[in-house]
Length: 332
Image 1 (cartoon, rainbow, N blue to C red):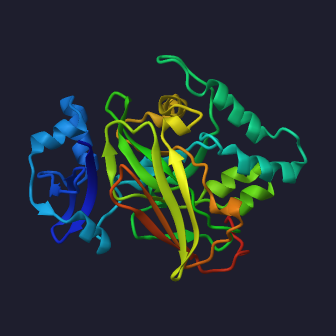
Image 2 (cartoon, rainbow, N blue to C red):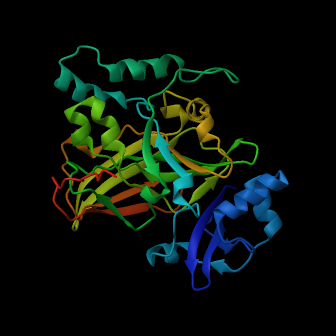
Image 3 (spheres, rainbow, N blue to C red):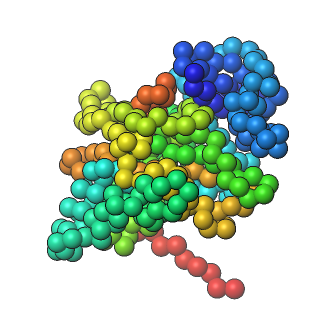
């Protein structure tokens, strides 16, 4: 039976809730955050599931009702958002290169784009034998913990952005132990929100297009990820559904193994700083922009997939202000 962890706001403060496949959820006594629970597990040399078992079961709660009331927060957070690093990899899923390849062929007139070359490298070498290093994936930085929003919160697109598009996918969450070892806490649903129109303008603007907020789902799935994850991605505009497509993830649908993606992220010393949190987005092959959808403020993104019981829902909001407002630097 899979264990899921959530962070819930109560009148007494933030608590950790543990839930099972049937949806029964109880408070984990003695811990005010998933970070504290995971830190204890690392120090004690036990798994997260064992740490929950040792803590015992507290008050029973209705997690679905709390989600509807806006009381479910990010599944994990850091007291200092600057120590929560947000990054990801693209072109990792079978079929994920098609949209990018068409986009860059149109922009550059190439027959074989760099995107397709990168994707093919993953197909040929992204799932190496255990204990060996595979092909290096595309990698991008999205910001720190201040860029993350939880279930039900707005995803805010900057005034200067050309697009605010969803990316339904899975993300891994990690805590770096005292000796610099990355510990995977589990996986969650995610919306790796991006500016696809900016990226389409020039693939060298990919870095700019990724510096946007992102949303994490209400549940942290502890343990291993199923080989195949099947879900759906919808966009509602008012009462109308303007986009509804399935999305696939899990290693059976990926050109890279999770272990290979993790290696190429954590091989850098600066990403193994004790006490830091990381979230790593694993990519997707399903985007509404490739189906001609132009999102608008007020659109609602809905992402769901088994084995996650609760959906991730966020509404697009565009920040106020002039799109061309100049940021002036003062010389000292």
